[in-house]
Image: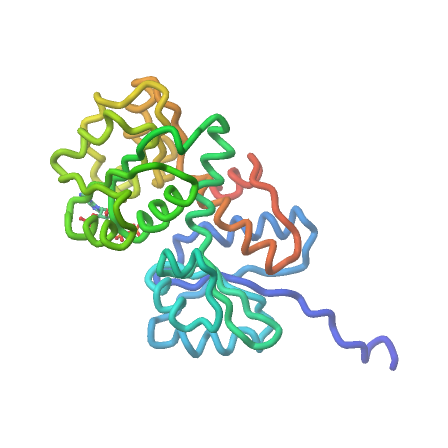
Length: 282
Ligand code: ATR
């Protein structure tokens, strides 16, 4: 066979599926990692409607895609469409990472809880989750991953508070006795004992109202983290810092949750460092 008849080496493709998708930072992050690791691949954002999701997931592997990230509003549906599901995705009830296996099977994972914990481990290395209860604000999709992963790393008890109480109660009935629901108007009371405090609500995000939970009960030295990363320093973290708490912003969760997917798809474990942070902030 002459050289021009040689089959082209396949350029691996991956991407992120959601709707809308323009706001996603994942293309910047994966693009940065592809470049810095010298990998000739592409990572593509795709706006896909719920009606088309199943067809798109069948077609992409035939086009050379090795996998995709899944974001709002398709995380639950993607899990339902998978042939194989990791335990952590089952526990969270949603998929954020899909792998198109060579045998044609669709493999679903959820790395949100992993990303949440890795962010804390990297940026607050002295954090000891087993030393005291956690206080979680919010009970939406992000809170599910946070609650599951906090229980997994040995937090003895979780106080959870949400504007819509019934959503917090739903998490309690699912995750069991280690969860106690606190009324939203009394959320400040949860701070007194907590050694880990997490905002999983969208309050404090650019364009949203601030989170107005009284923080004067916060313990000195408690670890306080916010899943919001725009702005990086939310008012919630600024207040917590003033109270002598250790604070960790939410950007690292976004970076760390992407690591297992990139490694699976492209065969290299990428670095979560200042260059990766800068890539998503550009
Ligand atoms: P995500 O997947 O990011 O968690 P979500 O499921 O829509 O998104 O959840 C958003 C969270 O922010 C919820 O806890 C929501 O509270 P409700 O369950 O009461 O809606 C919380 N949230 C959003 N806007 C809020 C507001 N103005 N006041 C209080 N909580 C708010």
